[in-house]
Structures are given as C-alpha cells and as structure tokens.
Image (cartoon, rainbow, N blue to C red; front, side, top):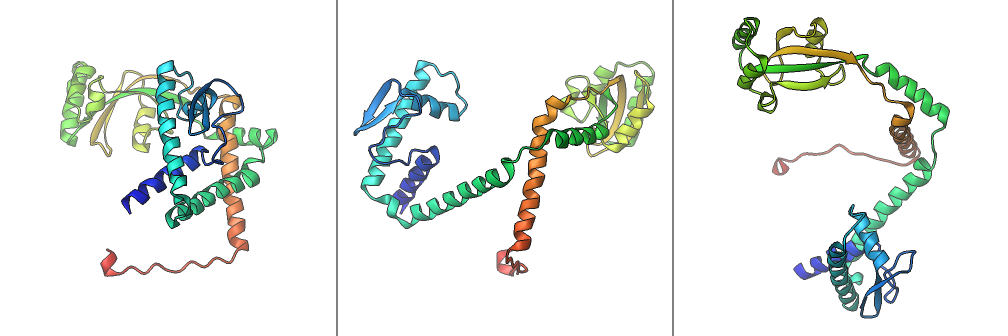
Length: 277
C-alpha cells in the first residue's frame, strides 16, 4: 500500500506539471530547440526544461541549474513510464485523485470564463478609485515608542525623558525588543496602521513631543512624534491591478450567490458528539 501511494503521488505530480501525455509524445514546448535527452524514446528538449524552471521562478538559469533540472526531469520521466507500465493509472487511488484534480481545474475554468474574462470598464475602475481616495489618510506620522510593563513604570520613563534623557537609549528598556534595538522607531505610520488610542495621542502631539502612556496589547506605551508629512496618494495606474482584482472578486461572490439561490442546496446542522471533541 505504501508503494502505491508513492506512485500515486508521482503520477499526480506529473499531471499537474502537464507531463501526463501520450507515451511517445516529445517533452517540448512551442519552440523546438536543442535536444538534451531521450528517455526510452521520449525526447526532452531545452525549451521544456527552461519552461519547468520558469514555473518555479528561475528565469535566467545557468548551465548547472539546467543540468540539475534535466536530471530531475529524466528521473520523473522514468518513474512516469514505469507507473504506466504497471498500469497504476487504473488504480482507484489515481482515479480518485484525477477526479479531484478535474474538479479543481474545472472550478478554476468556470471562474475564468464567468468572472475573470470580464474586464471592468475604465469608468468602473475610476469610480472605485475615487471611493478609495476617500478612505486614504491625509498625513502620516514618524514615531517611536517605549513599551513598559506597568503604568507607573511608564510615568517614570516619561519623567526621565522630560529631564533630558536620550529617547533612543531609554528605549533599550522597552519590552518590545524588535524596536528597542533601533531606538524604539516604528517608521512612518498613519490612520490605517495605528490603533485608535495611539492615533488619538499622536494627533495631539507636535514633532519632538512625547505623550502617553496608553495601554495597548503590548503593554503601556510611551510615544514620541518625530515628524509629520503628507500621505503619498497612489496614482490610478498604480492601484489599477488591485482594483480590477477587487471588482472581479465581488463579481465572483455575486455569481456564487446566484448559483446557490438557483440550486437545490440543503445544509444540515452539525451534530457534535462527545467522542469527536
């Protein structure tokens, strides 16, 4: 049974890579180029190897990378041929796995056909862009903080800072070690990234001022405002791909809801037994 699972895994792996082909069909892509290997009559060409490397993000492989990939592909081809010889594709496990793969592919195809094939119009996208602009911050704040275990300790730290101690050095005592090592700096933050209590505090500060303490999920925070600048608004072209994806996701949700409404769907209450807990 273990060996059968092993073969099933490899057969599915080849199917996913598009290697599930007729037995004598060459392993090649659209461009017919250098022949790198022949495995029991099946040709493996350089273009195919490059295409497989491209799938895993290797766009400019050197000769060693190509050789390594070729060795793997040859081994995979031998395993595939052996599985075919043993007629493992007829087993229940493989048939079941192929059915699951078919369901996945067909589901993706219907999404492409019904949703992704419809590109939102420019007017739709620009209207969505204008809506986005209304939600964006006007300014952003460069801040740093010190996190303390108690409110009393936080007030002690604020008093030390008021007397002139260096904020960066005092920040070494912060519970939040990730920022303590860089003087407590949090970089540029805005109304979308700050929790409400921190935002309310920062909005009242002037550059250089220290405020707090406020209670957060980290502990008691003392915050210093370093600078303020206008928030850089992304251009329409910069966010256009995200807007297209957002609209298509909404189209998909609406399409699925229509299928549910039109279909005969029955969902029953989940009965939880004591043995399953």
